[in-house]
Length: 480
Image (cartoon, rainbow, N blue to C red; front, side, top):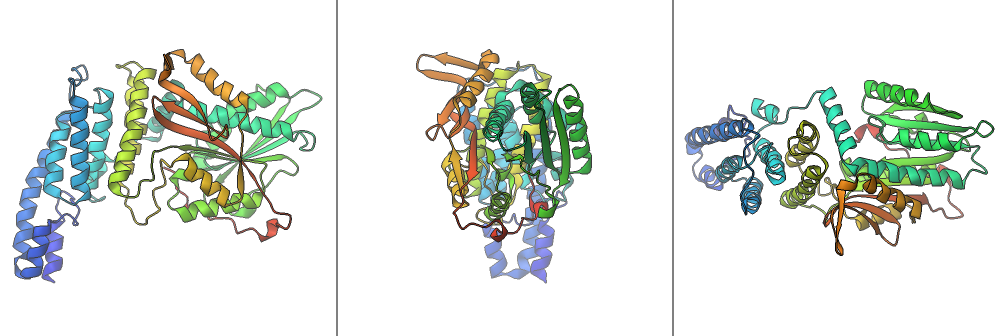
């Protein structure tokens, strides 16, 4: 009973997680349980003062003059060392060291500074939030969700400014168009796309335009988009947006069908004879476990689509621990923040909105996620990891066409300031053909940011669709 009381006292009014108790304290509790309450009270007083000081440091950072000078030479390396020290202390449950490192870190970071200062500020927030219970008002302040309109605006600004999402969508749509054209003789000029995360539907206007350009009065084309979304409101807004866009497209009949996550296999009404395509853009990486990915891939295989498009963020190695996940995330988002400086001017309010309400939020979520199973965090996988996963479920990679590569390079040429060639190397954004032309990546300097690949089902002569596994419960799939 006394031990329970001591643990309760260690759960501070601040909302500091009750798991934060030094190894010395734990040993003392085992030796003399009568000292638990007094030890807990002493620890509480010390942590209260230190943590309030940390939060005050964060507030001062947020009030910094955005016009102040950036880091001096070598300052970026110092920030990396401070970040690593903070993350190591957090991972080791060393509360005092974590608070001290984060307090020093907040003195050098800024949401208005250099790219490394800005990305470090959001990692500092994520690590600080990890010290707190989710019921803490301080946790809720740090992790506050932006309003829906702010979130939408941030994504819209990122879409316009950076080639990141445009590369993914345009390259995927090119593969979809080619799959449709290959089956024109027997698909009845019909295309059915199942988008597992339709979100705002930004991917589809360019496909609609391409199909409209191809359609004629004598040979019209029909397009059916089945979009899976998070809410009825999101699906209605997406449908209205796409329907309004299609009004200006001649000889094209577009139908949008929205489904909520949790829809059963029977809810998927497959367009008869039409070319069937499954779209997985930034989707698989956000599932909660390897088993859920397996369920989704088996369910897709049972649909027997003509094409499956996979687009994922890419990392250097599989993050198996919190520290490895931290380092992989830091490398990835440092490249993203650095690339934004090439897309938008330093004083850009659009850049601040993108970082605060989109990229920064992704960072904080990544830092506060709890590791409950070994295979939970599948973000930033290598290309060969996704390749092995797809092949194990009966999918075969398709070589992407020269048109796909040319279109991706044209995108960067249009945004000419985004790609600078120097001698034999490339600074800035670049397009890379990989896996003998079966994948195309968008890179920033020496970092692969995202990769597009296309797949089709491989079936044995005795394969029966009826024998395929049951459709997964989509309600359990939670993209961030």
